[in-house]
Amino acid sequence: MTSKLLRGRTLSFLRWPEAIDDHSAWRYEEDGGLLIDGGKIIAAGPYAEVARKAGAGIGTIDHRPHLILPGFLDAHVHVPQMQIIASYGAELLDWLNKYTFPEESKFQNAQHGRRIARLFLDEMLRQGTTTVVAYCSVHKSSAEAFFAESHERNMLNIAGKVMMDRNAPEGVLDTPQAGYDDSKALIAEWHGKGRQLYAITPRFAITSSPKQMEMAGALCREHPDLHMQTHLSENHAEIAFTQELYPWSRDYTDVYEHYGLLGRKSLFGHCIHLSEREADALSQSGSVAVFCPTSNLFLGSGLFDYQRYRRREKPLRIAAATDVGGGTNYSMLRTMDEGYKVIALNGEKLNPFQSFWQLTRGNAEALSVADKVGTLDEGTDADIVVLDARATPAMRLRMETVETLAEELFLLQTLGDDRAVREVYVAGRPAKSAIAA
Ligand code: GUN
Ligand code: ZN
Image (cartoon, rainbow, N blue to C red; front, side, top):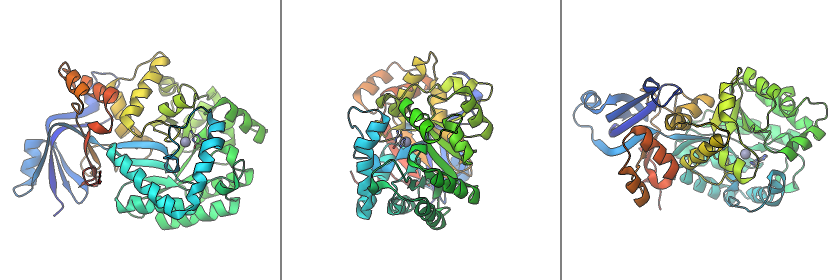
């Protein structure tokens, strides 16, 4: 009943591509097919073979000559910041105080939360992003709104209500007990409902009292299968203030370590100015450092040293993210374009296969969801993006001289955005074309 067969140029990664000619790291079919049933990919391979398996009577959706990839994942976004993206002229702490906290206080109004959650998820799908790890506001209703909208779209999303009880205006503060109770209630209601996953979300050490940090640690202990997300080592003034607030700590990472917040499902946004000790601690615990290039550039925070973190003796697990609204674009293509430039400023390069690995399987592995999304493997959920490298006149012109798949991917990353996203499937259902313009 819900079966469909997609035809196009399929690309999916098996592992990190060591080099641009490391062909065994990915699977590319010039004339590929994906058989989808019950929201899952049940066969993948050359179109002729998959069509034979599908048998007669299943309609083919022909996406040739476009590329079919796993939907993109965005590992760190702030839903309530849609109306402060593009706010001028401040570094992190001023930007939070001047724009972010006042904006997030509007989410006391549940209707506003529902409207923005709806527009946010529509925007993600327009951009080809099928999974996000999201910060909602401090208000429980903002997380309820997000999960309700996400569930309605049958998206696999990970989100949490922010916990914050100090150093911010009254309208965006909870208390250690209320933060704990609201998180607990949201976990009970939403975690594991359909495709929804809950992330315990203490905003960062500056806006949580030691008591609240203890409560966040308790939640992690009580729910060891849940994600935890926070911010770490983004900006020098932030690091100095954290040191003042937690004078006993060896460094910023030590604060989170002390409260039991490190681990394989722990996602730390930014991680720009880590000492070797901090990087070792993240590595040993299997924690994930989240690379947010457009935000790090926009707020003047610094250059995340992606290749050094990957290659150090104790490597870091890395995810990539927009960090909207500190980030300046909703598109993961635009994000990796800026990421490429940041890595270049560190004297290194990220080749296009590595970039697209990061956007798909790499982020899925970092988020511990690669068994479900991030590849076109049989048995996984049919979250898929269809990309058109000739989407604009300038792209079409440049494509005249493109000869290889690597060049085409690099063009998509460098010039592409939502216009290059022809279609998106969420658990097998067309989602981009279904959004009213
Ligand atoms: N640190 C704490 N909160 C935030 C936020 O909303 N955005 C960014 N970029 N950094 C933060
Ligand atoms: Zn953030």
